[in-house]
Figure 1 (tube, rainbow, N blue to C red):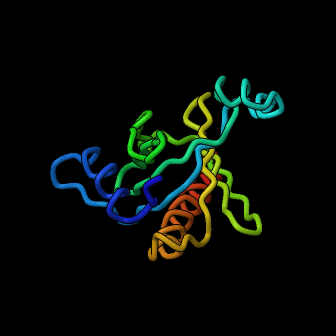
Figure 2: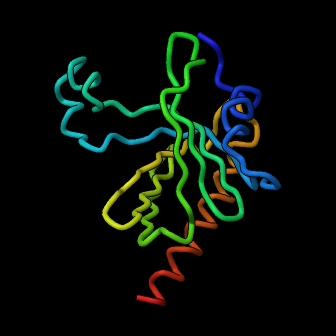
Figure 3: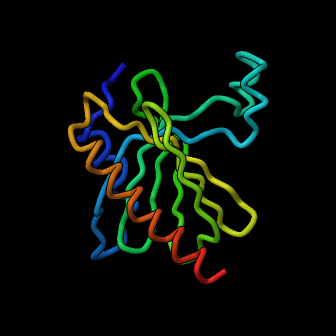
Length: 147
């Protein structure tokens, strides 16, 4: 199994950048399943989308890009996506012992990322996490003021 590290993260995230964009922060995360009840059904539940999926997230000036990956060597891209920051309608940040969880809502679609606070193979994980959480917290505060 290939190690998850900065090289793999850059290799997977960089193709999602538009011309002139750069990442302010990039981190390893897990995409929480949309139907967590499926996790209780073991292997079948995992196949049906009940297991957390590893991903990399990258924060630019205007959006969050993410790449879901897997495979035996962590080298297969299973899916990609982008969330425009100006389309986000709600953000909820929760702080757990080893992870921070960011629940992002765009209209009726909810996406939840669990971002580990420290990761041995990615030296900038903690700094990137702080940048991402700070930006999402500021966005959450501005959304509350306009509501």
